[in-house]
Length: 193
DNA sequence: CAAGAGATCATCT
DNA sequence: GATGATCTCTTGA
Image (tube, rainbow, N blue to C red; front, top):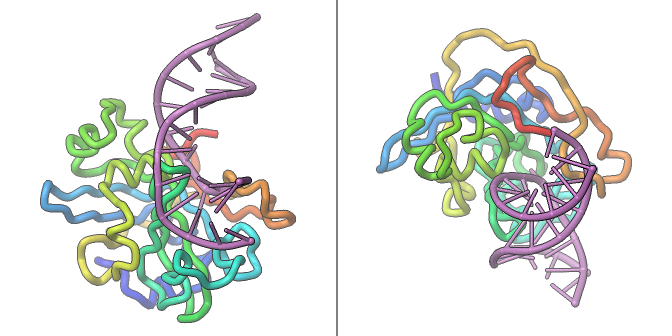
């Protein structure tokens, strides 16, 4: 069952936790890719110094200010795209970063795109998974009900998870230590570090 | 194996 | 003109 917009309208931290164990689906003319979400991070709003929207509404962060259930895809370090799903009410900028998935379907395509045969290296990181799933800024702003990109609930219960501080946000003052990163416990497909 | 550098560009100052 | 919600490769022990 495809998650509806109302799912994403819940508090960001809840969405980040609830997404664990759900399935990320990417439809593509080359073939579909599916992965089980095993790692997420919550970026909870304008007061969160690690959240891009803390700097205000700009061309880049515009999507986060829109309604929930849209993809926020941005380009970073000159190389990588990052996939987020916008949460909460319109005009309240918050999102969940999808950091890692366990490949479930379309592995051959992922291997080609990643130039790697190692299953554990296909989508175990936010940049890697965007590469494996062919997600780039052309998907920025797409609606999760449009069908090219969405999350599916297959009804197999909530996995046990851990929380840690978020990765790569040392600049975020007191927000850098908040435990807003969530990982499926014991899963080998989470990002390293 | 751990640590460090380099790659490379859109966005904001 | 600086910098980043990263990854990979090289280096050195």
